[in-house]
Image (cartoon, rainbow, N blue to C red; front, side, top):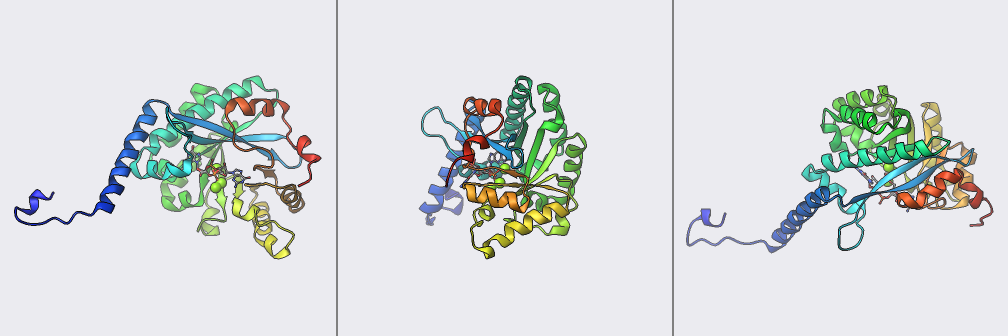
Length: 288
Ligand code: C2E
Ligand code: MG
Ligand code: MG
Ligand code: MG
């Protein structure tokens, strides 16, 4: 580029920008390598039905374990994968391995467990997304009712027509749909109602507002009531204390997910929890 400007002229070099671009290019390269070398793993976190105290579902959460170095959390690479389009391939891998794992667990368990998978807004730019999900369900043998896809309000807002169409196809297969991080986005309610969702996941920022101050309870309570009037089940994310759980129960929330029950853990570690089926027995006697 400097050459094109002609001899005898100076090109001012912006080192900050260049360092950033080199970083980004390196990350892109490493992500591509991670895809081919299968460096992504799924961790799983239980979603507990508050009434029955049983594990109704597990959410699959991606982690990147490079052959050398520490595990990397999605907050550090999903956005870049979205910007580079690599999320399509990563998302396909996640769907396939989550459904494989879910099918295997459900063959071995006497009670069903749903697998929840996060989908990025970018994945809805792929008009074949629903067909891909159908293929994955066919090849893995996971019943569609035992798959739940989680999308955020932003996804719904980004490509409304195509997303609406794909969500209808996905829903018609029998797959469940959750609106993730609800309350944190910008969607208008009338907009949201156009989509065929089954569950509202209350963003953890609101769960964590559940304190003994009545004014803090206003938003979480309003979301639970909204869910009920829209005929959507509610799931509270980020439940860390017994106090929050009891309060959610009082307000009529259906499911809870959070460190109170378990952090996201690898497949091997969650397996005994799935066999035990209920988690709250342990938690009951706890005083937090
Ligand atoms: P999310 O789908 O809202 O997932 C919940 C996040 O909250 C997870 O973070 C989980 O570890 C964390 N969490 C769960 N319980 C608690 C709690 O009690 N307290 C606190 N403070 N945090 C809790 P994680 O695993 O780092 O994932 C972050 C986000 O990355 C996810 O938010 C999701 O948006 C995205 N993500 C994860 N896996 C995938 C994936 O496979 N595909 C895509 N597209 N996005 C993913
Ligand atoms: Mg989620
Ligand atoms: Mg969430
Ligand atoms: Mg979140």
